Length: 346
Image 1 (cartoon, rainbow, N blue to C red):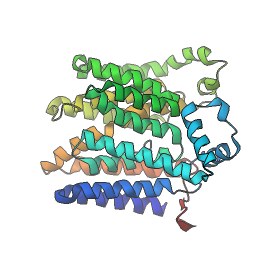
Image 2: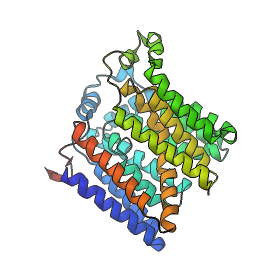
Image 3: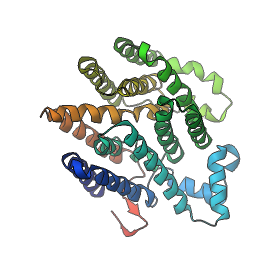
Image 4: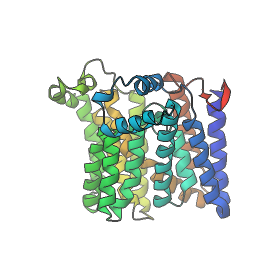
């Protein structure tokens, strides 16, 4: 636990340094990118399903039942006689890279946004376990920029790469386009109503109607009674944060044309989380949309800091650090931290 605390505090210091040292902010941001690649890329047996991926790579145990893109990459690595650690490093590197490149496109507050990518546990920390999906989340995050700039072919190619790694990327592939096409018609009030309704529908067991559709399929487990609901405290906190962000931008307006798209996508993440909250594993799909929170929250907080109002910055940083440390304690597989470059547990 001490290692993660020091790591987060160091990243916080680097992000703050990058803000106050505008002359070298790009270099500092690149250093922060390299640091998170170092931590995730060289991790050793860290993550819930780490050894499952190792066994899969070495023994080909699930090659016939998973996305062709990921299997193809494994086959190439096997033919090159590369160790499984190279596979983990490659996916960690490109996951962090696509997030970093996306942030460079979306905001001038790259370092602060990257800090929130690190401390929101369903993003960076989750990539230690959800290796394939986290890669698809990152590439779809980056791909959205090409949709906004009407470079449709590049968008489609990148999204299909994401789908070839994890098929859940089909969901953002279509929803991103819907948000892009209809964003100007979507009102703040509509987003708020949808978030409230989604919470109510979840409590009415709305998701159970899909159970029959997946009854004899690979994903039937996700709709079974074995699934645990999402912690109600988590749902309440994330909904309150989303409503705060929604009201803030309604009051102060957008300083960048992209922000409305990101706000809608963030609200989509909460709607999805609410709807699927009775089946916790299904909620993983909300991460494709929650990742846009790191842009709108960093832009919001920097505007507050410019006005010498620091409370919100420290509040949201401490809130997410708290949830990060809580996730470490609650979810197995992350402690202790081990790294191939260091011959000891941290």
